Every structure is written in C-alpha cells, then in structure tokens.
Image 1 (cartoon, rainbow, N blue to C red):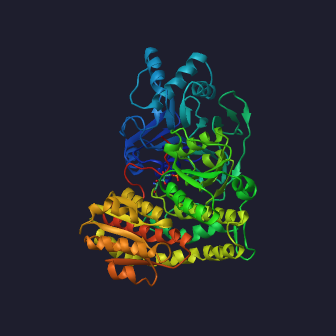
Image 2 (cartoon, rainbow, N blue to C red):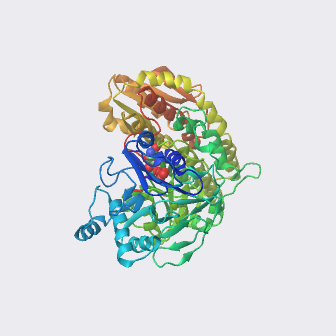
Image 3 (cartoon, rainbow, N blue to C red):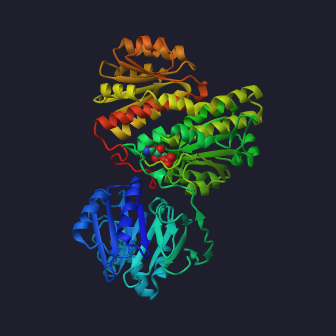
Amino acid sequence: MCGIVGYIGKRQAFPIVLEGLKRLEYRGYDSAGIALYDGSDILLSKTKGKVSALEDKANNEMSLKGNLAIGHTRWATHGVPNDVNSHPHYSNSGDLVIIHNGIIENYASIKEELIKRGYTFQSDTDTEVLINLIEDVKKKEKVKLGKAVQIALNQVVGAYAIAVFDKNKPNEIVVAKLGSPLAIGVGEDEFFIASDASPFLEYTKKAIYLEDEEMAVVRLNKKIKIRKIKNDELAETYIQELKINLEQIVKGGYDHFMLKEIYEQPTAIKDTYRGRLLVKEGIIRMAGIDDHLEKFLNANRVIIVACGTSWHAGLVAEYIFENLARIPVEVEYASEFRYRNPVITSKDVVIAISQSGETADTLAAIKLAKQNGAFVFGVCNVVGSTIARETHAGAYTHAGPEIGVASTKAFTTQITVLTLIALKLAKESGAMSKSDFQYHLQELELIPGKVEKALESDKHILEVAKKYKDSKNCLYLGRGYNFPVALEGALKLKEISYIHAEGYPAAEMKHGPIALIDEQMPVFVIATKKGHYEKVVSNVQEIKARSGKIIGIVTQGDKDVKAIADHIIEVPETLECLTPLLTTIPLQLLSYHIAVLLNKNVDQPRNLAKSVTVE
Ligand code: M6R
C-alpha cells in the first residue's frame, strides 16, 4: 500500500508531484521518490524516509525543471525500506520508469525468466520485475508502450495501480489498475495521476476513477480512452465532478489531523444523518436500505465483516441490531472470515464496514460472500472506493477525508449509519413501537451537541494524560454497548503511543486479567448510568481493592464511581444504545494527548498506514 502521483502538462511537474506525495503520506511513508523528465532525460531522486527527506535530497542532487514527473511514497511489501527499493524503478535500458502500488505475486518466476534473458536487477522489489517485463515485451513484440504494458499485465498475478513513462515518448503516461485505487485528474491541457484526488484538487475537480482491470494512455492533447486490460475493449470514460474541498484535507489550525478529526465529530455525525434522520416526519430515509428492505427483513442473519476500528464499530452494531431490531448478528474479522470456509447462504445479509473502502481483507470477504449468494451492503467513507463499488448497495458515512492513521470520526460516523439502519429495521419489522422509535430519533439528533459537550473536557483529559503517560500497560473495561468502546480505546492508545493496552468486558476481568492489577496499572472503566451500572461499579470496587488506578468515564453528575475512582471524565446522558458515540470521545483525546506528551508521530505512527491494501 503506497501513494502514487503523476503529472503531465504545461506546469512544472516536480512541485505538484512532491506536494501530492505529502498529501498521500497517509498511505505509507517509509520511502519516497520522484522521476522527472527534464526535456532530454529522466532525472531520478529517491530515498528511505519521508517525503520531506526526498524534498531535501532532490533539491541537492537534481534540476527540478520539467513538465512530466511521477512520484511514489512507499509502505514496504517486497524488500526492506531503503533507497534502492524505493520507487520509481527504471527498466534495464533506462528508457522506462514506473511507480507501483500493490503486489505482483508471481514476480519471482518472471524474474527468473528475465534473468535467463540477460536482465539484471538492482532492488528486491516486484516492481522492478514488472518494468523489465514491460520493456522485454515492448522489444520482443515491437509494440508501443501502452500495448507492452497491456501484454505484460496479462502475464502478472497480483494487484497494482501503476504509472509508467518512456523517455523517448515524453508526451504520455500509461496507467493501469487492478485492486489498488487510481484516479486521473483532467485539467486544461494537463493531466494528474494519483491514488486519490487530494494531490490535484486545487488544479481540477474533474476526475476519472479507473475500475479494476482497466488502463489508459494519458496523452497530451488527446481525449482519454479507457480500455480493458484483458481484451482491449473500450470501456466507458466517466468524468466525475468532485465535490470535496482542499480545506477539508488540510489541518485547519490543529496541530495534528487526528485532533482536527476528533473535533470534527459533531459535524461529521450531523453530516452522516442529514437527509436520513427526519425527526419531524418520524422516518429514516436511506435509499440503500429502502431499495432492499425485503432482503434485510427476510434475512436469516446479518454478518458484519470489517477490520480494526471498523470491526469495533461492527461490534457496537451487533448490540444495537440485536437489541433494537431483534435481528441475529455475527461480527467477523474480515481477515479470518475469508480463510475459514464460512457457511454463507443467499438468506444472509453481509455488511462490510470500511473507512477507506480499500482494505484488502474486507474486499476479499465481500467477494467470498457474493460468490456464495449473500446480499452485500457496504458502509464506507471514501466515495467511489473499491468496496463502495463492489457491494450490492450501501450507505456512505459522510465523515469527510480522514487523514490521521488512527481512525476517530470514521468510528463514530460508522456507528451513526449502523444505528440508523438498525432503527429503520426495528420500525419496519415491528420490533420497536412507533413512540419508542420516535424517541430514539430525537435522541440521535441530539448527539452532535452532546459530543461537543464531551469535547469540552479536553483540558481535564490532558491533565489525566500527564498522570498516566509513562505507564507501561493499561486496561480498558466496558460492558454491553461499551465493551467494543473499551477495545477501541485500547487500540487507539496502542497504535499512536506504543503503550501496551487491552480492552476487556468488565465482568471478564475476574476470569484472568485481574491478576495484572496493582498500583502501576491504570484501568479506564466506562461506567455510564444506563446499562449494567451497578455491576460495573462492583467491578470498579474489585480494582480498587487491588490498588489499581481507576479512571472512570461516567455520566454527568455521577456519584458512585466518583467516590471510588482516582479520576472521572464526564459525558452527557443519552440513551444506552447511543452511549458509545459519547464515551469514545474522551478515550480518543486521552490517547492523543498521551502520544503527543510522549513525542510520538500521532498522524503517522510507526509500521502503520491508513489503508491496508495488502493481506
Ligand atoms: O479503512 P478501513 O476501515 O477498512 O480500515 C480498517 C483498519 O485498518 C483501521 O480501522 C485501522 O485499525 C486503524 N488504524 C485504526 O485506527
């Protein structure tokens, strides 16, 4: 999983590609490189490290003038992150150059063949194999670059979004896609290539999203024609008008994207239910559900597949669906589901949840479910993403771009969409009375204001963070709807501060984890008024008796937990099923502050990337 950017046109290409790479660093940031055509030759600069390191290196070692360039920011799959394995990669002749996001699975056998034919390799990457295969085909078949790319891609197994150019034909870039995203920005006498639209938003709002197994020769002064890689058939060239703003993807005055995104949650939740939650009319309108209502109402069960934070949102949904709509739900890690030969029938509805819409495991789970006849519904944030396209129907979360690697607003907007679906099904199936339904609508509408209120505790949370920032381990406990919130709280802390943390159902503690409790162990307990409150208070007592440090996430005005806990953080009162939308806020802020206090890279934690498009 990597970010790719390309430019061809009248402007200087280097700054456009460099800036584009910075915006795509959420896709990977262990090395970066740019290949620029300066009017007579290809100049190449690449380095281990971030795009800022590339900027310094390129400034020192090459001229930055030229109107054609391609660049790459990498998350290593084949070959360790170092200068040599960084993209772009040359072909042996030095005429062709490529950037690639994805994996060529059969690269080893192709490499062997090419070595027999006299090719040599500098790097350990599958990508260098691909560019030499393209060169080999081009020479052997005496075809143009576009054709050579097409023939070569028909020989490879794997996933790719690629951009290739030939220094002898510097008026075109050849692009192709299978499994990894690729957008083409269409300007006036200029084109942009990128993994998503963010690198070209200030230049053009017109974009073409390639489908899987499609390719195009992007040539100056020519209309783009898209072809099927398999059989050369022409495909539809659909130019979309993008509605997204650049301001939506820059930090907007916050120190980190993560903090900005935490603070965006009131708006993001409102945007997610806008036009769907119609309180006055007493209805929930969701085209994706309305059009397939029978599928949901007649389903034997709902299977939710997702990864990471999206999986946690799925777990919250399990409680909501079963409790409100009385529909049986199973929640599966997509990575397990795809390989465990699950029993799926045409009476199952599968809900796939993914912020990015590109997660490889979730995509594979969707494909498996479809093959077995299930109806597959997607809950995605990124419009036009692969999962959004691969599912039979779906609902977007409308959270806006989430750049911080640690998911925050995606989680709360996923819960919002899933709550809307559960409520709608509860009403349509008769599982919920009209008055109860109406009450839930009113309460859901109040959530953005209550999230704002929860955010007001930020300063107090910073003080709590200062106390626990040096902890080596932390426990997170919750029950019912808030058990998944405990898991999510622990994941947030782990991924950005590198402190070991575990989430548990509060009552499970006595079956093992209680042995860990001593005066060194902070325990974050979600103990809101509704939902097993007394039981959780007993769990808190058990921790206290063993000298654990207790930080309670409680309902405003709470007395019982306050009397025992070392610290409390209050959230407003709401319906039990809506509490995860509030209790998750202080846990996000806590993780954020601890990571900042520890001087960690909050938006780009080590070893991670925003969308995991590899297995
Ligand atoms: O884009 P997706 O929602 O499919 O991503 C799933 C996980 O990779 C993601 O939630 C990951 O766990 C985040 N880093 C969590 O903050």
